[in-house]
Image 1 (tube, rainbow, N blue to C red):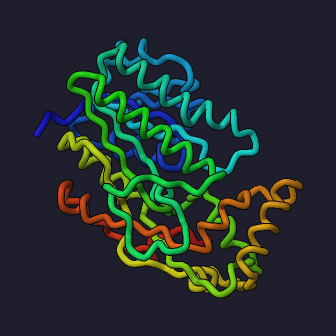
Image 2 (tube, rainbow, N blue to C red; image 1 turned 90 degrees about the vertical axis):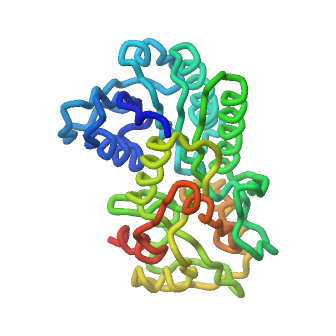
Length: 314
């Protein structure tokens, strides 16, 4: 087991996942310093005195800061989560930003990176009959940029780890992360009083609670675990039950028609939740097994998928 890193950097520090990560690592007894990097101004409610907040674009070099603060581990949370209308801009942050970060790590001699990917990289398609494992090749739904950029970033991390002596990366393919103040297009859809859903299907979904995700990050930091790990809460929740749990009503629409309607409304700027490709995530399963994380990290989610979902209910 390697020494637990005491000087840590978190990118995307003021996003939903980033701020929980900053809070957790800043509160650990062995942590000397957390360098919180974000394009947005620092949050005023951060109470830990060992947090140094710096406003900086992830695409800009950070090796000067990593050297100055002796950064041993980077938790790379910076990412455009919501479906973008400007694909090139989003990719410059999601992918080029990751490339710039790894270049800074090399220049500063920082050898450990933790990265949250997504189980959506496996793709949602008819015929997905079993939970995906980490050995399954990524096959994202074409046109769903969130997943496509996650795959591109994963490849950059794998290449960096291979080419950099003694470097290690921990990639966590998580399902949809939930918790109080979570913000994603699944939650936004579930707040609709009358929610269009694919007819003749009721796909299962997985969710994971925010603290369970950060538990996995902490375990990876403590053990220097490297490689890819799926993260999901126990059990699943079907779409129609999700709608009922939020007190709303499902409106069944044939899948192809729903996909066309979603694509047209996206192009006409009538909605900003998702392009047409996102409907696949409602129509078909994309479940993942977390057995590897349990076996190799000792990770145990405290919340089931349904319990995690309910923590985000208004």
